Image 1 (cartoon, one colour):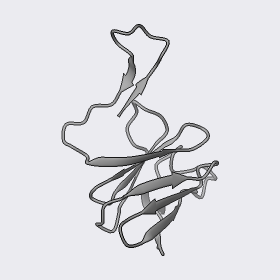
Image 2 (image 1 turned 180 degrees about the horizontal axis):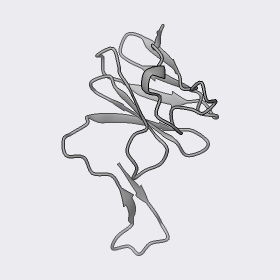
Image 3 (image 1 turned 90 degrees about the horizontal axis):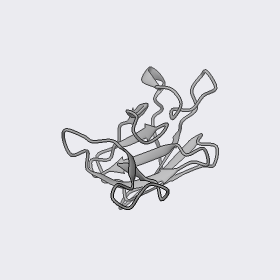
Length: 115
């Protein structure tokens, strides 16, 4: 995962990167209007990031099927994930009023709604 800044010289356009020791198997990404990132993986997990270069704030466990596509609402309060055979709708709102992008959800992680 990295950010490309067109204002930087052609030799090194990557402004911020986030390396991983093991392959997280990311295969899809979506952003909110605030620039928050949701990344889906082949193992069905969804990670919520406040911005590129930081650790994930929240890891939402999947149901084991690869995430095909993600969409995040404008306000970042809902994540929609699609798999081969079903949809997952996941609320990200915490009891503090912040989303799972802004703070760690911990024990407040919701069960995804499977459609």
